[in-house]
Image 1 (cartoon, rainbow, N blue to C red):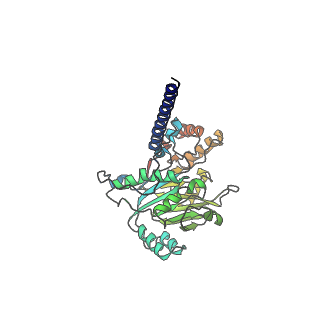
Image 2: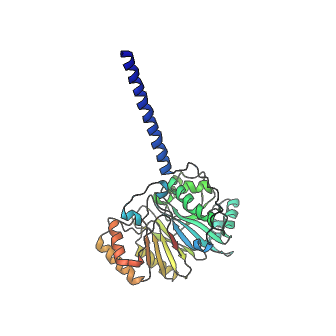
Image 3: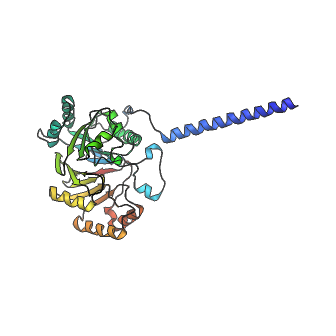
Length: 352
């Protein structure tokens, strides 16, 4: 009897262990399916059954900042409006025909690039379509997933382009971690990628151990620099104490001839960046997209005053903020700007 009871106890213990192991394996499989993190940078094969009109994607910027494609989503009303985690990332697809004397071509020739890289970079700019990124987020896996789930699928569906067209270049608003975290993934896909960045601490680029080798880089001083037809880099001095020597905004001409300003680091206030852009180009700014700096620490009264100035000086401006905008600021901007306030989320396409 004692033997039988011991045998039954061992059998029960074995059954419990088997049940626990099965439950653990099932949980692990569900987590892998939820996170959906690929371990390689290899791109998926094209799907020939999907086609989009080229005009739907040309002259647009798509927001790639957000964690949804990693299986992480915060189901709050604010989170559904604004998509910002670990930095921002925008993908541009523009129809541009640079002339032989385009400033960016000259900058490439003057930059310390290898002769083979220089020719390849210039050739990529002359195919009539620009595909480039502005900032690359703060996390390698996030950049990889958002690129694969958004950009690759869209390029596959476009009859205009080969689905695996490489990026022409990457523009960085600063060398802050939230702007450069995805560079390792980008360099895996395109090791000779050209970086366009503002002036920075010389040691900072060396600290970014994200590359197999030093990347090709064009470093721009303070000022407004034409790059290609309808595309400018606006480099502004960063405020004292910010830890950055400069920040780079992007100015893009839209179909109606007016400009959209894309801001990455919000070291300068939006109103200051807008005023400088108008002075430099003599053009109207129709949209302000990206980082605003309207965070939790922003006083409500100060934000109200700035919004009133924005409405007076830029009456047609549409504000499309990044998720550094706090919940309080979000409600206030929505109330004060109405239809001129359009918060974006992952996959939102901004028509230019």
